[in-house]
Length: 355
Length: 215
Image 1: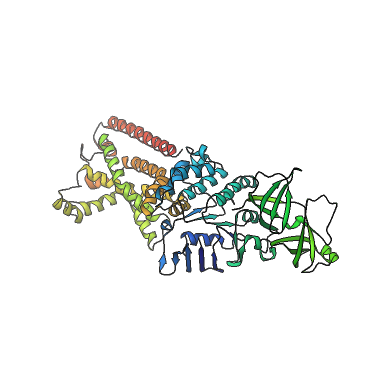
Image 2 (image 1 turned 30 degrees about the vertical axis):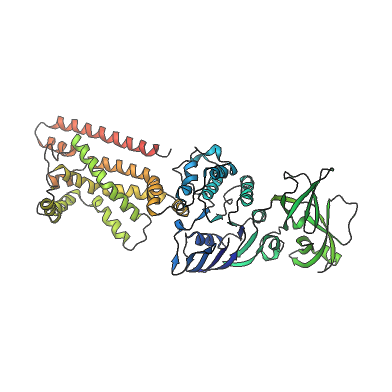
């Protein structure tokens, strides 16, 4: 599955000029508010017609100005909007089946049951949409889009209208969705943690242009490319190798091993690991007699000053890591590219089962 | 009284599809001349009803352009018949219906029809399954208001179809006739009370109906 987007449009002083092609299952369209992300989604969905553009999903050309414009109802692209947009005059069940009834290839009973189960909607079916909480509305909107059996799912900041608690409730559903279905998704967000948990591929948009594009593992360590965003750190996939007798679980990844406290995942499962830049300390010699469970041998790729701090890009086996330390520490250690260092990991975040 | 109700009901029902279409056209207008169309729609509301009645007489009268054609081809006659009274009422209350439906349409979220499009709903599908149900409270309240206003229509009816008891004599015309005849005050007062009762019943029913929908 591939998504090709090329569009040019001018709105007053704001110029949109976006070109990208992605083959990832979950592609994140990432950038600050007002950067033009939502316009891109609207153009892909066919709800907005750019002055110049070509859009193709899985090789099927949907927009090719000025001669071709497939209307949104024939695009087979379901959109999950920020404001859910449930139909207020219908029950949850009728909302869920709205797209399903109109789909050329209808999902079977088992599939419907699976989606309802996946999103925990069973108890809500008879309810009126006005009685739902924000999080429930998001889930129904997601289910409605899924049951339309689209070629691709477009998620336009589906969590932005929710508070942190609700967002935390919905994210696991999205993670399960990304893992369980092979449905291609375009996930629009300005929240770097959502992107890190869900995406394979990132397209960074800034001021109406593509600022960067690449696999999530590579791009998120390069905080400098994503200006205005606090450093996120490294994201990579690891395997649950062993439940150790001492209570720790051993994870293996391309670059070494990590020891983490108990996880819900079974042995052999793949998990997505996040190491925040602030949680990585650097040492020139291998530290011993230390409380931290994880020390990784790395090589320095680059040393980049960012304000008062220095971001040190590291390579640990085949995995990119990043450490954010103070300029003073960097000068004291005399860090330079190519140097071998030890990264002391203060905390490991395990996000999801990787696909 | 039944004649009055019948005339009003027919007037409202006949005008409703046109009012809905016009409201669709005028809600979020995107075409040149929408302002002029809007003004023409509102004309019956601001024109003296007698003038509307006179214009109807000119157009739909026995020798009028459309009136003579209708009589010659279908044998349909509006003048001096209750259908003419309904036509006059419909025309006068048309702007009230358009207005109510249009307000309802404008207050619905255009994002909902956009969402329906992405889920595969075509134009008519969206019209009947999204737009129409969402505008239903406005349609009902518009129809009730138009109905109540139609019950009180006087000028256009008396000018167009005259005051014929049993055929075109609606409540207000009957009150007028009663007042014209000596010793008719009691009859007029009774008819007035009836008018007030009817108006109260329908306005209340209308409000309740509009509230009950989608609650």
